[in-house]
Length: 252
Image (tube, rainbow, N blue to C red; front, top):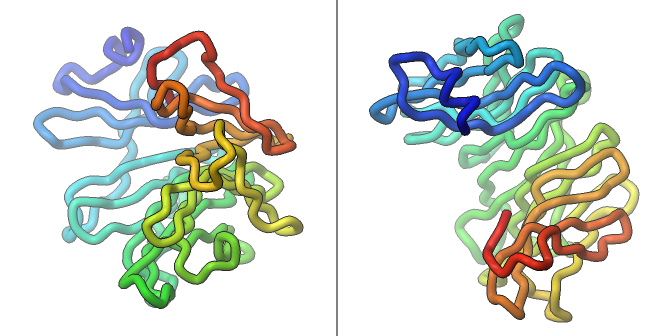
């Protein structure tokens, strides 16, 4: 927080960091603002801050960047009106990915890989008993959209994708009806894997946010003993590890 405060433009008094590039670049994606007005920015390792000229449509009030890559591609969503998941770069401008899916009720682009693979979640009307539910897709410029599908083959499930790796494995959370959200990992060959909780209950609350090239996944899960949501890691075998076992406080 100290470093980011030092890098803010003098006219701003708030900041939020959302993503950092790997490797040696050290660039941080985030937002800088004042009085409810936010600008997407990139902080460099040398101490400079660069505003991103991502256009905001007239029917939205805020642009929320979520991730970026070394190719200069940024993903995020527009909110405060019609929600839209998008990808943007200085070279190609802004592409509303959710608008290209028929029947989509807005959406959010939550992650992008180095090759440009985007995790997109949209509001959909394809569930039978609920007026709307969530559906997740992978998108690439060359190949278009690929649906992640239905969690546990249930048409009433809401599926939210939060992270992906270069092999196309996706993680996130899902719920069916009024059930608590469950963390999952998905790939093309195995489909969905429900990630373990700290209790034997299949409805144990949790969510997965990111993973690495080996499939090791991070997120948070309800720990029944303390009654807290705690930062958690799922190895490739989908077992669960508490990241701060001696800390009784909630963590993410």
